Length: 505
Image (cartoon, rainbow, N blue to C red; front, side, top):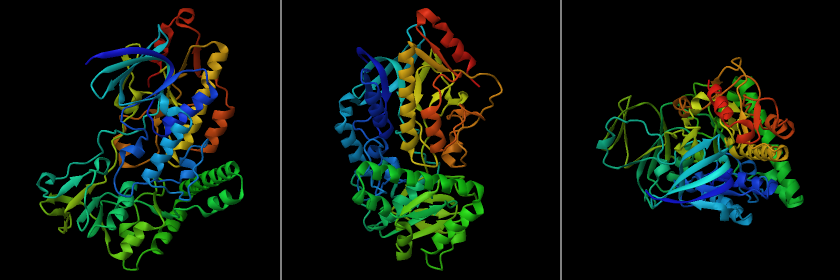
């Protein structure tokens, strides 16, 4: 591997998906004199919306909150398809000149903080194997929360005997012809409920095979009130009103699910029964063993999944897999589901920082041993932020206010002459707890990957946009937890290493 020339920036952003473009917009708007670059490991921008190419791929939340608040979504469809979202991201990056700051095909493999220099050394590998080094004062990770290299696929006994195609939605082959095929989709989550009705349009038959069901709710693909306001009100006002309508609706539904789970459960199941034939066993196939929002609720636009079931082209089977055989899947009950194609829609592999190694003064940062500060930074890691969205609302909502928090922090540091900031865990009274209050399989599998949260602010992540917006907008940057240093020479750079060593849990 050869090494290219080294460059210096104020900020390096990693990732050119929605959160990376959002971060870049806020940085260049609020801090126009600062230099920045965006590193993107893939050959195109868009993140998730460039990666996923399976049939029917779409947003799992409405675009009026998933879209950029500074360039609101204007299309009639509130639940949008993947290609439309990718185009929206690309057009936004071009409109604001952000695309000129993006280094495509640059995958960050390592970032090293030096207290003596008060800067990060970022190493990225290009497609031809060269190592590019960039120096920056602040590192901003917008690389998502899962591995782009592969999806999660459990070991299925006998899978190597299957004579058809066995694939994962994350690795969907271009041009796959499934017309007239018998397809078994393994899974019951957001990907499965999206993929199944799309496949059913051309396949001979599609079976959604689930070990246990998920909660599924129907929502119109078009937001009638939003479209009405767009036609009659100034665009900016209509966008703000629509955003807050949807934010408050989501918060209310989540609160209802957590405080009155039986009521919410009853409402969801009633809605499902209204869309299915009486002979469908809703208790078996659509009634999970957990309460609503103990795992993420699946969204079905315009009831397309239920329409496909009513048509007879889709069947839901709730059972375990005994083994995969040459012609399909043999179930625990003894039945064999014939298949030409098996799709393992079994989730993601959770991965922070795009899999890159993060070091602070030569010590590898173990994020599972860190506490999150305001859901955006980490105990003991200087000049470093992460965009991490909500689990119970649109991802972009939290990433956007995180970007604004980072801008406030950098402005404050410039005004006071600080060069280094680092969240410091105050004492042992802050006990670590799981970051996500979810029972989903991908969360359980990520126990050794995800950082922890504490019982109180600023170490608590409330999963509430209104609370976060107030705290991030009006809360003090210098809150007694964030420690600031002026320069390595004036403040003795070794103190950052001391903070780092104290701030593990």
